Amino acid sequence: MANHVLDIDDLTLDEFNKVISYGISPNPQKVMADKSAALLFEKPSARTRHSTETAIVALGGHPVTVKGDEVGIGKRESVHDLALTLACYHSVIGARVFDHKVLKEMTRAIDEAGANCSVLNLLSNKAHPCQGLADIMTIIQESNEMNLDIGKVKVAYVGDSNNVVSSLALSCAMAGVKLVVASPPGFQPEDELIKRVERLGGTIEIVVDPFEAVEGADFIYTDTWTSMGQEAEASVRKEVFRNYQVNDLLVKRAKSDVKIMHCLPAHRGEEITDSVIDSKSSIVFKQAYNRKLSAIGLLTHLVKAQGGQIWP
Image (cartoon, rainbow, N blue to C red; front, side, top):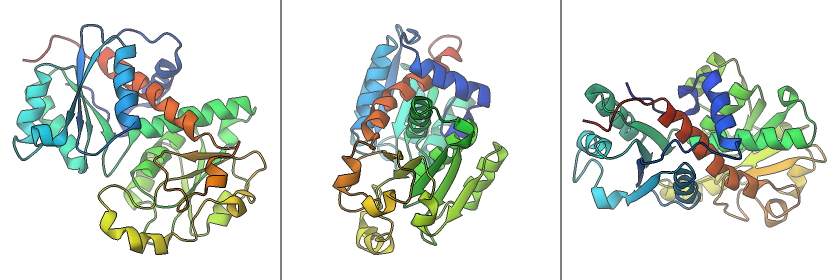
């Protein structure tokens, strides 16, 4: 059966640590020599496309990027048939989709057919494992530079508890990092995510007050209040989250050397101010760079676990 990563907890703790090790290695193994990967994008992409394509090249492979309307996922051709068609040519299918169920359907088709191809979630409405892994890599690197004990590090997330929070929470649980999430009622982490985090031995502290969340924080993280596909809710969300902006006043409540994180793209003047995201405390572009390293780590893990020839 093929190995897939649809979220962080598809990895064991040992695999999680190995993925980080693969990613930060200065000399990535050429595990994708003579191999290719299909990259499907239903949603627009900047960091995901560039980081994944360059990661594949760094591993000696060839990326084939396809926009959703070119293949008509689930419309022009069924998800089942498309997944098995791509498995005829590629070692990995990376997909950035609106609905997480599409990824589930892909993995089911591949597993039932016994195809030697892995599915990697490049983003869905439920999870963003490539981002979550890049985030924890960034937190570990910065903590080491500041001589912080990773087991005592506090990350405060302020804003909408979206797909990014899901993978961030699982990554923090794997690494033993404390996570506090400040979101308004109705926009907080779901019970299912809390249970998954607890199964990994972690916890999420959930609060409403963002100032309470950032008290003593080593890292403050935020993301857009309105994700792709939620544009119709934008005006409502701006009102709901107006007190959740990461600005100078909020940052002053955290540690004096707090680091600022954002997965980008940022809506400057909404969830975060220019003065904060452009400050010396900001590590958002280190996060962006680490997206390539997280892709290298995940792809290395997936391809190394494979065996046999291209299916069928």
